Image 1 (cartoon, rainbow, N blue to C red):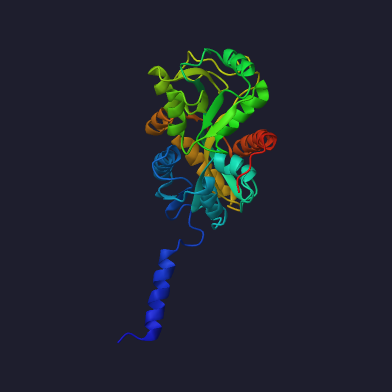
Image 2: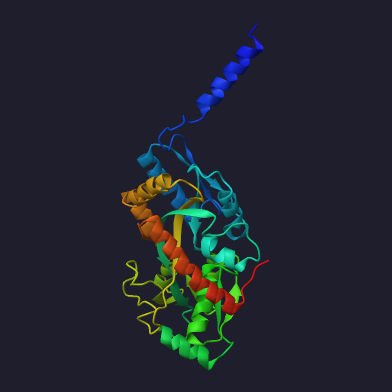
Length: 323
Protein backbone atom coordinates (compact mmCIF):
# COMPACT_ATOMS: atom_id res chain seq x y z
CA UNK A 1 0.00 0.00 0.00
CA UNK A 2 1.09 3.50 -0.73
CA UNK A 3 1.35 5.60 2.39
CA UNK A 4 -0.78 8.73 2.88
CA UNK A 5 2.43 10.76 3.04
CA UNK A 6 3.50 9.38 -0.35
CA UNK A 7 0.12 10.21 -1.90
CA UNK A 8 0.32 13.78 -0.63
CA UNK A 9 3.84 14.12 -1.94
CA UNK A 10 2.79 12.80 -5.36
CA UNK A 11 -0.21 15.15 -5.52
CA UNK A 12 1.92 18.12 -4.51
CA UNK A 13 4.48 17.26 -7.17
CA UNK A 14 1.76 16.97 -9.82
CA UNK A 15 0.25 20.30 -8.80
CA UNK A 16 3.65 21.96 -8.92
CA UNK A 17 4.33 20.51 -12.37
CA UNK A 18 1.02 21.92 -13.66
CA UNK A 19 2.09 25.43 -12.73
CA UNK A 20 4.69 27.46 -14.60
CA UNK A 21 7.97 27.55 -12.73
CA UNK A 22 8.64 30.81 -10.92
CA UNK A 23 10.59 33.14 -13.17
CA UNK A 24 9.75 31.14 -16.30
CA UNK A 25 9.51 33.40 -19.37
CA UNK A 26 6.04 34.59 -20.39
CA UNK A 27 4.03 32.91 -21.77
CA UNK A 28 4.54 29.56 -20.10
CA UNK A 29 1.01 28.24 -20.74
CA UNK A 30 -1.95 28.88 -23.09
CA UNK A 31 -3.57 32.33 -23.06
CA UNK A 32 -7.33 32.77 -22.84
CA UNK A 33 -8.99 35.54 -24.86
CA UNK A 34 -12.49 36.50 -23.72
CA UNK A 35 -14.66 37.64 -26.63
CA UNK A 36 -17.71 39.40 -25.14
CA UNK A 37 -19.82 38.63 -28.21
CA UNK A 38 -21.38 35.58 -29.86
CA UNK A 39 -19.33 33.13 -31.95
CA UNK A 40 -19.12 33.77 -35.67
CA UNK A 41 -19.30 37.56 -35.57
CA UNK A 42 -16.56 39.83 -36.97
CA UNK A 43 -14.92 40.30 -33.56
CA UNK A 44 -14.92 36.56 -32.87
CA UNK A 45 -13.40 35.79 -36.27
CA UNK A 46 -10.76 38.47 -35.77
CA UNK A 47 -9.88 37.21 -32.30
CA UNK A 48 -9.38 33.66 -33.57
CA UNK A 49 -7.26 34.64 -36.56
CA UNK A 50 -5.11 37.17 -34.67
CA UNK A 51 -4.85 34.77 -31.72
CA UNK A 52 -3.61 32.03 -33.99
CA UNK A 53 -0.86 34.30 -35.35
CA UNK A 54 0.07 35.71 -31.95
CA UNK A 55 0.22 32.17 -30.59
CA UNK A 56 2.65 31.17 -33.31
CA UNK A 57 4.80 34.21 -32.52
CA UNK A 58 4.81 33.62 -28.75
CA UNK A 59 4.89 29.83 -28.82
CA UNK A 60 1.61 29.25 -26.94
CA UNK A 61 -2.00 28.62 -27.89
CA UNK A 62 -4.56 31.42 -27.67
CA UNK A 63 -7.92 29.98 -26.59
CA UNK A 64 -11.07 31.99 -27.36
CA UNK A 65 -13.89 31.99 -24.81
CA UNK A 66 -17.15 33.66 -25.89
CA UNK A 67 -19.09 35.44 -23.14
CA UNK A 68 -21.82 37.45 -24.91
CA UNK A 69 -24.56 39.55 -23.39
CA UNK A 70 -25.54 43.04 -22.22
CA UNK A 71 -23.69 44.91 -24.93
CA UNK A 72 -20.42 43.13 -24.14
CA UNK A 73 -20.43 44.15 -20.47
CA UNK A 74 -20.71 40.57 -19.14
CA UNK A 75 -17.49 39.49 -20.81
CA UNK A 76 -15.80 42.80 -19.99
CA UNK A 77 -16.63 42.43 -16.31
CA UNK A 78 -15.18 38.89 -16.26
CA UNK A 79 -12.00 40.08 -17.95
CA UNK A 80 -11.62 43.04 -15.57
CA UNK A 81 -11.86 40.70 -12.57
CA UNK A 82 -9.35 38.13 -13.90
CA UNK A 83 -5.88 37.61 -12.49
CA UNK A 84 -3.55 40.28 -13.97
CA UNK A 85 -0.89 37.81 -15.07
CA UNK A 86 -1.25 38.06 -18.86
CA UNK A 87 -3.05 34.74 -19.22
CA UNK A 88 -6.54 36.24 -19.52
CA UNK A 89 -7.08 38.88 -22.20
CA UNK A 90 -10.15 40.38 -23.87
CA UNK A 91 -11.04 41.43 -27.37
CA UNK A 92 -12.31 44.97 -26.83
CA UNK A 93 -14.06 47.36 -29.17
CA UNK A 94 -15.85 50.69 -29.27
CA UNK A 95 -18.96 49.18 -27.67
CA UNK A 96 -17.24 47.63 -24.64
CA UNK A 97 -14.70 50.35 -23.84
CA UNK A 98 -16.47 53.54 -24.94
CA UNK A 99 -20.22 53.21 -25.44
CA UNK A 100 -21.43 50.66 -22.86
CA UNK A 101 -19.92 52.43 -19.82
CA UNK A 102 -21.69 55.62 -20.92
CA UNK A 103 -25.13 54.30 -21.90
CA UNK A 104 -25.68 51.57 -19.29
CA UNK A 105 -26.80 52.93 -15.95
CA UNK A 106 -24.38 50.65 -14.12
CA UNK A 107 -21.40 48.61 -15.26
CA UNK A 108 -18.90 46.95 -12.95
CA UNK A 109 -15.78 48.20 -14.71
CA UNK A 110 -14.09 51.41 -15.73
CA UNK A 111 -12.88 51.36 -19.36
CA UNK A 112 -9.52 52.97 -18.53
CA UNK A 113 -8.94 52.03 -14.88
CA UNK A 114 -10.03 48.38 -15.09
CA UNK A 115 -7.88 47.42 -18.09
CA UNK A 116 -4.34 47.62 -19.35
CA UNK A 117 -4.63 48.46 -23.06
CA UNK A 118 -2.39 46.33 -25.28
CA UNK A 119 -2.94 47.10 -28.96
CA UNK A 120 -5.47 48.15 -31.56
CA UNK A 121 -5.89 45.58 -34.32
CA UNK A 122 -7.71 47.99 -36.60
CA UNK A 123 -10.39 50.61 -37.17
CA UNK A 124 -13.46 50.66 -39.38
CA UNK A 125 -15.24 53.63 -40.94
CA UNK A 126 -18.96 53.43 -41.66
CA UNK A 127 -20.89 54.03 -44.87
CA UNK A 128 -23.83 56.42 -45.02
CA UNK A 129 -26.41 54.79 -47.29
CA UNK A 130 -29.99 55.58 -48.30
CA UNK A 131 -32.81 53.77 -50.02
CA UNK A 132 -32.52 54.24 -53.81
CA UNK A 133 -35.96 55.87 -53.83
CA UNK A 134 -34.74 58.73 -51.65
CA UNK A 135 -34.22 61.76 -53.95
CA UNK A 136 -30.72 62.51 -52.65
CA UNK A 137 -27.48 61.52 -54.35
CA UNK A 138 -25.15 63.43 -52.02
CA UNK A 139 -24.94 64.06 -48.28
CA UNK A 140 -25.84 67.72 -48.77
CA UNK A 141 -28.91 66.79 -50.80
CA UNK A 142 -30.02 64.44 -48.02
CA UNK A 143 -29.52 67.19 -45.42
CA UNK A 144 -31.61 69.59 -47.50
CA UNK A 145 -34.32 66.95 -47.89
CA UNK A 146 -34.37 66.23 -44.14
CA UNK A 147 -34.58 69.93 -43.28
CA UNK A 148 -37.48 70.36 -45.69
CA UNK A 149 -39.33 67.48 -43.98
CA UNK A 150 -38.50 67.63 -40.25
CA UNK A 151 -39.46 64.46 -38.41
CA UNK A 152 -40.47 62.67 -41.63
CA UNK A 153 -37.25 60.82 -42.51
CA UNK A 154 -35.77 58.02 -40.39
CA UNK A 155 -32.46 56.26 -39.86
CA UNK A 156 -31.93 52.65 -38.83
CA UNK A 157 -29.51 51.03 -36.41
CA UNK A 158 -28.85 47.53 -34.99
CA UNK A 159 -30.13 48.76 -31.62
CA UNK A 160 -30.09 51.52 -29.04
CA UNK A 161 -26.57 52.48 -28.01
CA UNK A 162 -24.84 50.77 -30.94
CA UNK A 163 -22.23 52.66 -32.98
CA UNK A 164 -24.61 53.16 -35.96
CA UNK A 165 -27.15 54.68 -33.57
CA UNK A 166 -24.60 57.10 -32.14
CA UNK A 167 -23.30 58.04 -35.59
CA UNK A 168 -26.86 58.85 -36.61
CA UNK A 169 -27.30 61.02 -33.51
CA UNK A 170 -23.99 62.76 -34.25
CA UNK A 171 -25.22 63.42 -37.78
CA UNK A 172 -28.42 64.97 -36.42
CA UNK A 173 -26.46 67.20 -34.04
CA UNK A 174 -23.95 68.32 -36.66
CA UNK A 175 -26.52 69.01 -39.38
CA UNK A 176 -29.45 70.30 -37.31
CA UNK A 177 -31.79 67.74 -38.87
CA UNK A 178 -34.77 66.04 -37.21
CA UNK A 179 -34.54 62.33 -38.04
CA UNK A 180 -36.45 59.49 -36.38
CA UNK A 181 -34.31 56.67 -34.97
CA UNK A 182 -35.58 53.15 -35.76
CA UNK A 183 -33.68 50.52 -33.73
CA UNK A 184 -33.52 46.88 -34.81
CA UNK A 185 -31.96 43.74 -33.35
CA UNK A 186 -29.11 43.45 -35.83
CA UNK A 187 -27.27 45.17 -38.66
CA UNK A 188 -28.60 42.83 -41.34
CA UNK A 189 -32.23 43.59 -40.49
CA UNK A 190 -31.73 47.34 -40.23
CA UNK A 191 -29.88 47.52 -43.54
CA UNK A 192 -32.47 45.25 -45.13
CA UNK A 193 -35.27 47.62 -44.19
CA UNK A 194 -33.35 50.54 -45.69
CA UNK A 195 -33.10 48.52 -48.90
CA UNK A 196 -36.82 47.75 -48.61
CA UNK A 197 -37.79 51.38 -48.15
CA UNK A 198 -39.22 51.09 -44.63
CA UNK A 199 -36.40 53.34 -43.37
CA UNK A 200 -34.60 56.00 -45.40
CA UNK A 201 -31.00 56.03 -44.14
CA UNK A 202 -28.38 54.07 -42.20
CA UNK A 203 -24.72 54.24 -41.17
CA UNK A 204 -23.27 50.73 -41.40
CA UNK A 205 -20.14 48.63 -41.87
CA UNK A 206 -18.75 48.70 -45.44
CA UNK A 207 -18.48 44.89 -45.54
CA UNK A 208 -22.28 44.56 -45.54
CA UNK A 209 -23.24 47.90 -47.08
CA UNK A 210 -21.07 48.03 -50.20
CA UNK A 211 -22.32 44.72 -51.68
CA UNK A 212 -25.91 46.01 -51.45
CA UNK A 213 -24.84 49.35 -52.93
CA UNK A 214 -23.19 47.61 -55.90
CA UNK A 215 -26.34 45.54 -56.39
CA UNK A 216 -28.39 48.75 -56.52
CA UNK A 217 -30.39 47.92 -53.40
CA UNK A 218 -29.09 50.93 -51.44
CA UNK A 219 -27.28 54.09 -52.50
CA UNK A 220 -23.99 54.80 -50.73
CA UNK A 221 -23.43 58.52 -50.18
CA UNK A 222 -20.21 58.82 -48.18
CA UNK A 223 -17.71 57.18 -45.84
CA UNK A 224 -17.06 58.37 -42.28
CA UNK A 225 -13.32 57.65 -42.56
CA UNK A 226 -10.42 60.07 -42.38
CA UNK A 227 -9.66 59.26 -46.02
CA UNK A 228 -11.52 57.43 -48.77
CA UNK A 229 -12.13 53.71 -48.28
CA UNK A 230 -9.77 51.63 -50.51
CA UNK A 231 -12.70 49.28 -51.18
CA UNK A 232 -14.77 52.17 -52.61
CA UNK A 233 -12.36 54.92 -53.73
CA UNK A 234 -15.13 56.60 -55.73
CA UNK A 235 -17.08 57.32 -52.54
CA UNK A 236 -16.33 60.69 -50.87
CA UNK A 237 -15.74 61.08 -47.15
CA UNK A 238 -18.18 63.00 -44.95
CA UNK A 239 -15.52 65.72 -44.74
CA UNK A 240 -15.39 65.97 -48.53
CA UNK A 241 -19.18 66.08 -48.46
CA UNK A 242 -19.13 69.33 -46.50
CA UNK A 243 -19.13 68.17 -42.86
CA UNK A 244 -15.82 69.31 -41.41
CA UNK A 245 -14.21 66.89 -38.94
CA UNK A 246 -17.05 64.34 -39.29
CA UNK A 247 -14.96 61.22 -38.75
CA UNK A 248 -16.13 58.08 -36.96
CA UNK A 249 -13.93 55.02 -36.56
CA UNK A 250 -14.98 51.90 -34.66
CA UNK A 251 -11.98 50.07 -33.23
CA UNK A 252 -11.14 46.50 -32.23
CA UNK A 253 -8.22 45.76 -29.94
CA UNK A 254 -6.77 43.63 -27.19
CA UNK A 255 -6.73 44.44 -23.46
CA UNK A 256 -5.67 42.78 -20.20
CA UNK A 257 -6.81 43.27 -16.59
CA UNK A 258 -5.35 46.36 -14.90
CA UNK A 259 -2.16 45.57 -13.02
CA UNK A 260 -0.75 43.24 -15.66
CA UNK A 261 3.05 43.77 -15.66
CA UNK A 262 4.33 46.27 -18.22
CA UNK A 263 6.85 43.76 -19.60
CA UNK A 264 4.02 41.37 -20.43
CA UNK A 265 1.90 44.14 -22.00
CA UNK A 266 4.85 45.18 -24.17
CA UNK A 267 5.49 41.59 -25.28
CA UNK A 268 1.84 41.10 -26.21
CA UNK A 269 1.81 44.47 -28.00
CA UNK A 270 4.80 43.46 -30.12
CA UNK A 271 3.16 40.15 -31.02
CA UNK A 272 -0.15 41.85 -31.89
CA UNK A 273 1.57 44.35 -34.16
CA UNK A 274 3.62 41.60 -35.82
CA UNK A 275 0.49 39.51 -36.40
CA UNK A 276 -1.00 42.33 -38.50
CA UNK A 277 1.74 41.74 -41.07
CA UNK A 278 0.68 38.11 -41.68
CA UNK A 279 -0.90 37.80 -45.16
CA UNK A 280 -3.92 35.83 -43.90
CA UNK A 281 -4.63 38.34 -41.13
CA UNK A 282 -4.20 41.22 -43.57
CA UNK A 283 -6.62 39.55 -46.01
CA UNK A 284 -9.16 38.91 -43.26
CA UNK A 285 -9.06 42.54 -42.11
CA UNK A 286 -9.59 43.69 -45.69
CA UNK A 287 -12.66 41.44 -46.02
CA UNK A 288 -14.04 42.88 -42.78
CA UNK A 289 -13.31 46.44 -44.00
CA UNK A 290 -10.87 46.90 -41.11
CA UNK A 291 -7.85 49.17 -41.53
CA UNK A 292 -4.83 47.81 -39.61
CA UNK A 293 -3.71 50.27 -36.93
CA UNK A 294 -0.45 49.07 -35.31
CA UNK A 295 0.80 51.16 -32.41
CA UNK A 296 1.83 51.30 -28.78
CA UNK A 297 -0.33 50.85 -25.67
CA UNK A 298 -0.05 54.62 -25.19
CA UNK A 299 -1.44 55.17 -28.70
CA UNK A 300 -4.36 52.90 -27.83
CA UNK A 301 -5.05 54.74 -24.56
CA UNK A 302 -4.98 58.14 -26.27
CA UNK A 303 -7.37 56.91 -28.96
CA UNK A 304 -9.85 55.53 -26.39
CA UNK A 305 -9.70 58.78 -24.39
CA UNK A 306 -10.56 60.83 -27.49
CA UNK A 307 -13.37 58.48 -28.49
CA UNK A 308 -14.79 58.50 -24.97
CA UNK A 309 -14.93 62.30 -24.88
CA UNK A 310 -16.57 62.51 -28.30
CA UNK A 311 -19.23 59.84 -27.78
CA UNK A 312 -20.10 60.82 -24.21
CA UNK A 313 -21.00 64.25 -25.52
CA UNK A 314 -23.31 62.69 -28.14
CA UNK A 315 -24.83 60.26 -25.62
CA UNK A 316 -25.55 63.07 -23.14
CA UNK A 317 -27.00 65.35 -25.81
CA UNK A 318 -29.27 62.59 -27.13
CA UNK A 319 -30.08 61.41 -23.58
CA UNK A 320 -29.36 57.76 -24.41
CA UNK A 321 -29.60 55.41 -21.42
CA UNK A 322 -30.08 51.65 -21.06
CA UNK A 323 -31.18 50.09 -17.75
